[in-house]
Length: 292
Ligand code: PAF
Image (tube, rainbow, N blue to C red; front, side, top):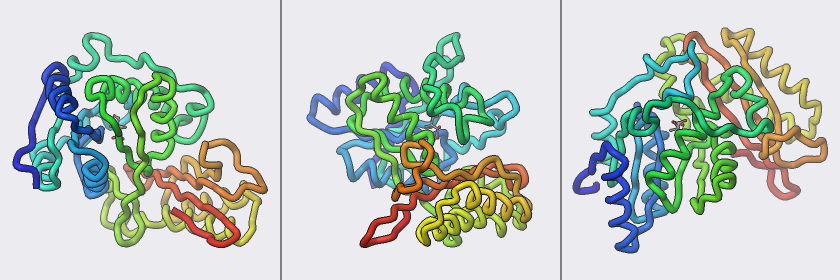
């Protein structure tokens, strides 16, 4: 456990501290979050600590990535508990900027994600969402200037957007997409799971199960991608979900090739109030047939 968790609220003090660490030859890993931390986030902290000498976590509920009908105001803010968890996990610094610190008077997105990333999956029903994510992540990376930044692969499209962002801005920062952390029944951990009723929680692992079924189909040699997607969506819709998408793509989020051997299976659906997302990578090789 780290002796103390430094708390910093403004960009200038953060930059001064990071510079001290860099001057001492220390490498910095950064985990951006919106707080309400769970085991999924904490495993990002573990990975950050394994990759660098110092681990910084930011908590900032970013207004520009929420649509007008989304849950920005209701997004759970649990700072005291988050600090306890980060302290116990050995993070070095928690960065808690204010909206005006990061945006000044202009709360809008000034980075626009290219169409090939913003015309599909979560972007379709959340216009402007990834512009908001790219804008805030650029501001945070600029403030921290880490050696490495770590994001959860549950938000696979987000990780692709951030990979694009660092190339676009020519930043020398390594981006790591960390494995999805799941509950025992396969449900991907998410801050939004707490909105599930008890009955919905019992249904919630079905999202992961339908992805596994598609992977089984691909491994068995099926390449009727639209049928596989439609079958999965039907199962979900019949069992109380409202499907946004179930899609098989390649790992760059381009359409899959019939002869392809590396697939991403991605889904988003509402179960009652929360909109849950999940994905599964299915790599088919002559020797091993596996999935992540
Ligand atoms: O994944 C999240 O929690 C957010 O989208 C992020 C990356 C912290 C940007 O606000």
